Length: 477
Image (tube, rainbow, N blue to C red; front, side, top):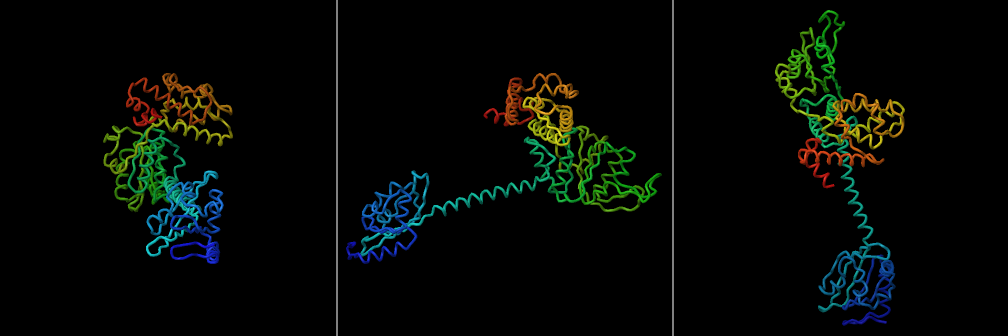
């Protein structure tokens, strides 16, 4: 048997040699004539044919290649056809759909025209299965994408690694923490405002623990808790003999204890007016003089202050020195009350239930109705009140899911402080469900109630303590 061409022929012996050579190559090799009829195919090509469509060599040999393979092509065009048409080397990926096996296969083909006297004589097509390589590349790309995602998440976790004491899921608190994080990257003085019990000291600790001073002392002093006659000696310290009854050897003040770290002045609005002037000088110059001493020492302190005073009282020069206020409030941060970020109530209650269950070896659980009821209370005492109420519930309740009715006798004064209107408007949950579903149902009913009462999305949003965009988004959902 011989293969005839315009320039001669390939006899059977030469063909056997050629077949032996191409069979020794692990890539697919097929030889076609100028009409794209398959003349030869190697073992790798035969194996590929069988895997893709369970075709035998005789199904391809002597047949037009496009007639056999074109129906299998899922993505791309036969390279042999393009090569025969353009008479130039063609190289491209061809994707085959193996429907019977539910698989795809991608083969990189190269078709080379063999020309003689300007006429196409043969086309040699070689192919290599790229499926695994492409899958590996896709997996690598996915792994790199995942790696970048986790890198970002690790970075965020590193930035917010010290947030264990701040339980929150609301947008308002998220914005507050972002502002606090930016403040932590500097040494500027921070002035935190907010109602009693909202967690101002936790924000101060958050700033310290995410700052460059995190390994240095965090000294907190409650200005309202120290008697006025002792406040200066506590803050600035004193030397021996500074006053009658002073301790032998003197005493280092809290400001000195905070050297290199953060000094947190809670309830600074209760700092005596005359002491405010002395604190201003220390804060301004970084120089500290103990009571009774003539020597000054240099201290390096980052100041964070907090107060529950209203803006009008803060700006009253007879109550608070305005020059000190300006020095301490380089970065003002306001912490919203719980009633303005109700999304935080369930996470806070869940956290404290878990905490006090462990502390008191209890197994108290709240039903969805109980959570919904707690979400409707005004919580005038904010996080501190939630914490105390939950502790009381865990101590006084029986183990197991508690209904709203179980809470009423335990709540005591907190029910009276909630007012009748709140109790009458408590959200009703009809059946046991997951907490996330309960929260969603609670939000839905609260939004319905607010819209029915105020007849306006902006007014309803204001009453619920959320931006109008939140109402629109939840209504759409």
